[in-house]
Length: 119
Image 1 (cartoon, one colour):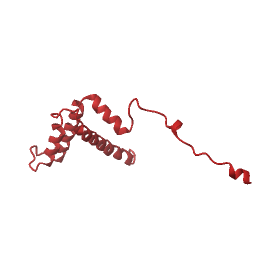
Image 2 (image 1 turned 60 degrees about the horizontal axis):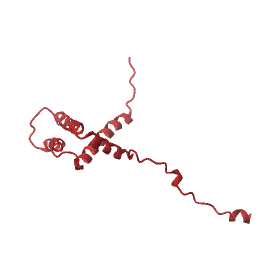
Image 3 (image 1 turned 90 degrees about the vertical axis):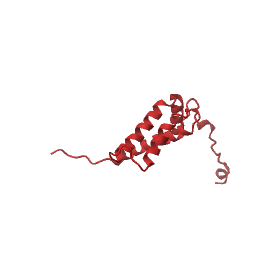
Image 4 (image 1 turned 30 degrees about the vertical axis):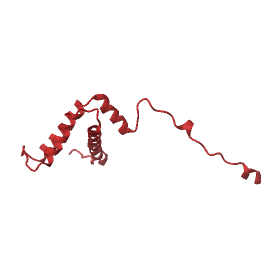
């Protein structure tokens, strides 16, 4: 009998993390003026389709999820690559070409030697 390995919560959390990260990236790109307006219709239209009360493709709820994920995917693929990469780097907190080591700039408070003289 094959042994089942327990499911790892980290794997599940990773999928939801990726979904949230990509949704955040799409929102950032929707606000960017360098992305053409007609490309912005893809994610906006897909979300509008999900919220619309009439289901044009009445298969099941998974077709709505597939439509939204496909629209987000094509939106990210059709956006200017340099803009997408800039937003990905900004979301990581890393700005390409602007890295510096903060250690030399940190001030370490100097201790006074007065307590040594009293002893």
